[in-house]
Image (cartoon, rainbow, N blue to C red; front, side, top):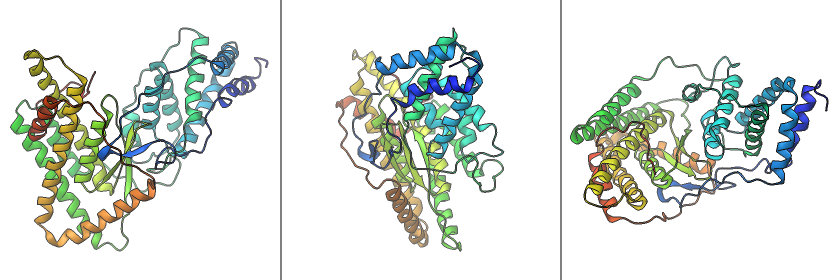
Length: 413
């Protein structure tokens, strides 16, 4: 193909992707194609597979050589990438989902290339769906400068090969370009209050203060849910439950998915973990979804800090840091916190018994929507190494719900 035909150069190069891609149209959620499990009793997490060299890679190398020799094809190559991304929006994917998959399966340069594609593709829309702007704001702003044209073309094709293999997901919101409901100016006051309480809980070095702040946040969430149920009971047209995806990143995905399930359940939502794609889908009424994500993220930060301190105590006593200790710690932490959060919700609900029927009706609607999205979910037992000290420390940390901040809220091997 002549270098004077950039579109033809790109078309010929992209043939290497379609010859090795998975069959399209498979569903990744709901048990139909990708191992979704209810996170209350989640299965042992699988490791992401690395890249393998083979016939497909030799074909990709040849395609990369073709692109490297034709600088005029770069603009067309980017345009095709934007098309791939746009197609994935219609197949249920969102920016955070794509970036999560690139991080799991590829390397940093691929993530940076994908980020640039997402930014350029979404820049043309007058308005974006709810939560999309926050996902875009979280993307890394730094681009990637390849050492040479062949390396650039190879990385782009490797990224595109991942994108064309991604299956359809059940939609959890609107797609860019669709008609959207009127935008709400600013953040709801309740969410601002909850965010402030949890930020203080993460920052304090006093366990009792962190516990009180986290408990107050949960109480606010429970009371707000009751208020919403009361309003919905008198509304002429009942609201329907929505959904949001929340990343569940390694290591210790099982424990994190269980923690998210505990937070969701205590706040009248349901969580379904998709192990293969690294996220849980939380189903619930709109007013409950953002608070659930905030509380889960904060409790994960607090649990990480507590585990870090507990491990320091273990090392001071002459015991080595072990994965079984951390896994047991986080499982106990999630188990105990679930009980505490649910107890707070029940106490608040008992104060207004007249609203219990409306609340029960909304929970039925959430369950029905969850079953509609995930008709074939399965519950599996946790298969993890047991460490009694880890379980004891995790339970104690959950009772305190905070031991101080961790710089990034991450749990590391």
